Length: 215
Image (cartoon, rainbow, N blue to C red; front, side, top):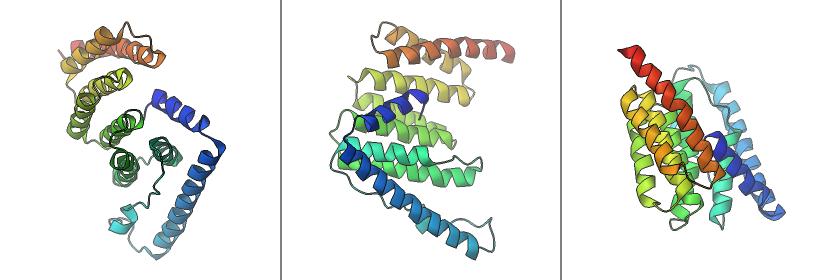
């Protein structure tokens, strides 16, 4: 989740009613408490920290909410509660749980046009953060194909594809994709989209210098 997505998420939560915020917060507190207890028990009984975590520890009990907004807000609140581990094996477990939260938005509200696309992008981001770059790019493309009229999602996914290509070392493709973001969305009236355009401009020239240094 990037900074702009985080701002969106917090706005979703802030503009929810007090009743909705209390319901989401209560569910999250219970969830964290369960993880804390199970985590302590697991730590005290573990004799070999290098062993893989039990499958059941990777399963998340996610409450079902009546609206896509609440379901997505819960996913974002859970995601923001995590301290992302530098250890890749542990991070994979964390991102698996984040994916489960956002996947519930897609499963429970498949026709939603506001929160479902954000959840889909979040799933792609989770894959990118654990090095599953081809899978991430595939999901970004699928998101763009599924929500062609959502300007922010189009710009956000395309920008993320460029970053992922950059991380793969495909510098020319990344540069070309940053240019697509700049060309397609430079006239947008959305502040969020314009932020992505500005970031693409900055990274476009960074990639250009990287390409030169590789020659």
